Amino acid sequence: MTKPSDLWSNNTVQFMRLLAELRALGVHQFLREAEWQALEASMDLEREKIMELFDRAENFWERVKDKGYAFIVNMRWGETEPPKDRPVTEHTFFSLEECNAFAEAVIVGDGWLSGEQVVECEKHKEHWYPIDEECELCREEEE
Image (cartoon, rainbow, N blue to C red; front, side):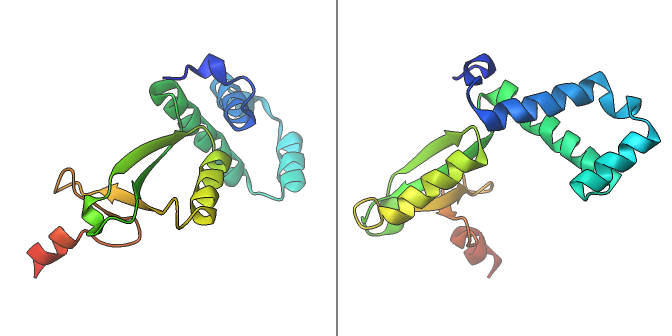
């Protein structure tokens, strides 16, 4: 597992880390009203949205510290029929940019690198289904 200290060159991780640490120091409590107003105007955001950014940064940074990554994608690969027999692999990413680049590569490579993003059913363990669909086993049980 990658340690957060090994991610120095990853801008996304380090920017989130900086915001999280500034929040932890309480920098938002030390801003005067005039500074808050200037920040709101400069960012074209309300104060609540700026605080939400601090919260999001803290959540992101905690995931990286706890798990060693921030985003996870499960992919089902190949052309085997039926699709449920295709292997599923787990991929972790440190930034949304990395995750999007991976997704784009899968789209570009379609044909020799056919893949679809899947999720594991919480009720039916080790049963995977496309991320934009419902679990067919759960659907069958409901009917």
